[in-house]
Image 1 (cartoon, one colour):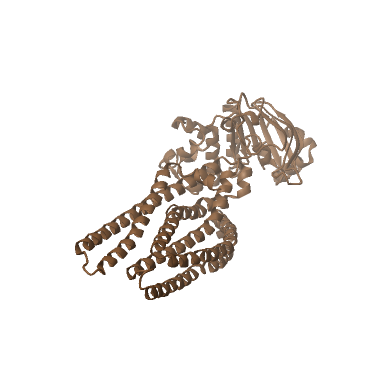
Image 2 (cartoon, helix red, strand yellow):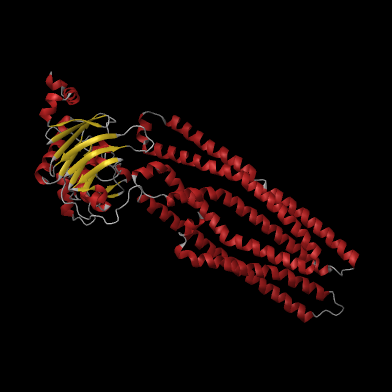
Amino acid sequence: MIKILMKSIREYKKASLLAPFFVALEVVMECLIPLLMSYILGRAQEDIPDTKLIIILSLVIVVLGFFSLTFGVLSGKFGAIAAAGFAKNLRRDLFFKSQDFSFENIDKFSSASLVTRMTTDVSHIQMAYGMIIRITVRVPLMMIFSVSLTFLMSVKIGLIYLAFIPLLGLILFIIVKCAMPRFDKVFHKYDKLNASVEENIKGIRVVKTYVREDYEKEKFKKSAEEVRNDFVKAERIVAWNQPVMMFFMYISLTVVSFFSAYLIVTTNSSELGIENVSAVITYGTQILMSLMLLSMIFVMLSLSISSMRRVVEVLKEESTIKNPEDPIYEVEDGSIEFKNVSFKYSLEAEKFALADVNIKIESGQTIGILGGTGSSKTTFVNLLSRLYDTTVGEVIVGGKNVREYDLKTLRDSVAVVLQKNVLFSGTILDNLRWGNENATLEEAQEACHLACADEFIEQFPEKYNTYIEQGGTNVSGGQKQRLCIARALLKQPKVLILDDSTSAVDTKTDAIIRKSFKESIPNTTKIIIAQRVSSIEEADKIIVLDGGKINAIGTHEELLASNSIYQEVYYLQNKKEEE
C-alpha cells in the first residue's frame, strides 16, 4: 500500500527529504541547549566563576535557539509543500485512473464513493503525510539523543525513563488497535452520505415538484447522525490518549525529581550534580512529549490508514476494458454483426441481460430498436462502442471484432447520443467541440443544422458563444438533445447511435432530423432506439427486443403484419387516429 502511494510523491521528493533533514537539525539544537545550560550552571558554582566563558556560552545558547527556530520554520515550510504536493498528485492519479475505468469499474465503486476518496480520504492522507515526514523523524531522534544524554549524566535516571517508554507504547498500541476498526466503519457511512447528497442535488427539481424537501432533510439528517455516532465512538477511544500520556508524564517527572533529589543528598552530588537536574528533567520532558507526538501520529494514522486503503483500492483497480496489444486504428465502414452474443453485468448474475443475439447490419442502413422497459435496448448499443464487453460471443464493426480496435478509434467511429444527455459548463461551441476539438464554426453550424439545433441557437443573443450552465440547466430538454446530436455528428462517425435521444423533441422536428440524416449522411449506419413507432417506421430494419432477446426483425410493414408486440405498441400510439 505504501509503495503504491509513494509513486504519487514524484517532483516533491526534494521537499519530502528537506523537511526531515531540517527537523533533524532542529532536534540537535534543542538537545544541545540543556547540555550547555547544565555546563554553565556547573561553571557558575565554581569558587571563581569564569564570567567571560559563561557569557560566551550564553550567547551560544541564544544562537542555538535562533538556529532551532529557523530549522523549525524551514521544516514546516518544506513539510507543507511536500504534503500539499503529494495530495495534489494523488488526486490527479485518482482522477486519471477513474477516467480510464469502464462502466463496470465505476459501477463497482459508485460515483459518490469515488468523490469521497478524491476529497475526504486524500485530505486525511495529506495530513498524515505532513506529520510523518516531520514528526516520525523528530520523535526517534529526540528520544535517542535525550535518553543518551540522560544516561551520560545519570545511568539510574536514564533507566527510569527507559522503564516508562515500553509501558506508554503498549497503552498507545491498545488505543490505536481499538480505534482503527471504528474509523474503517465510518468511511462506508461517508459514502452513503455523499450518495444521498449527490442524488438529492441531481434530482432537486423532482424533490421540489413533489414537495419532498422535508423527507430528504430527514434522510440526510439520519445519514449525518450515523456518521456522527460512529465518529463519536472512535473519538471516545482516541480521547484516552492524551490524559493517559499526561498522567504518565507527570508521574515519571515526579519520580525523576524525587529520585534526583535523593541521589544528590545521599551521594553528595557524586552521581548526579545539582547543575544536571534541570537538564535531566528537560530531557525527560522531551522524551515524554515525543511519545505524546508519537501517539498523535498513531491516532492520525489510524484515521488515515482506512483512507489509504480506499485510495489504493482505486489505484490498484484495473479497467475491465483495455486496448489490445496491437490495436487497429481505422474502422473501414459502419457494418455491424452480432455473433451469438450474450451479456450480463456481473459474472455472478444468474440471468443474462442480453441473450443469444445474432444479427447482421449493412453499412449505411438505418436500424430501429423497439422494446419495453428493461428489454436491454441500451445494453445492446453499449456493446458496439465497448462501454461493456460481451460475456459470450463477439461484436463486429467494420469487419473486425471491437476488441481489436484502439478504444479512441472505435469510440470516435461509433458515436453515441446517450439516453441521459449531458452538457458541460461552457459555451455552446465548447460543448459541440467535444465531438471534434478542431471543428470550425462552419462545421459546428452544419452539424447543428442537421440536428435542427440552429433554429434556437440563432435566437440567442450570443448565438454559438451562449454560455451553457453546468448540466445544461439553462436550455430545455429538447434543445439539450439536439445539441448532443450535433456534438455526435461532428465526430463524422461510421455508426451513429441515438439512444432515445429525440424523446423530448416534437414529432415534426424528429421527422426533419431523420430526413436530414438520410440525405446528408447516407453512408453512416444509424441505430435509433425509440419509444415512438413514428421515429423508426421508415428504418431499413426494425429490431424488437423482449426480455433481453430478439423477438423479431423486419420492416415496419412486416412487423405490423406479423409481430404482436409491435402491433400492440403501434395501435396504442395511434389509437385516436385509428378510431
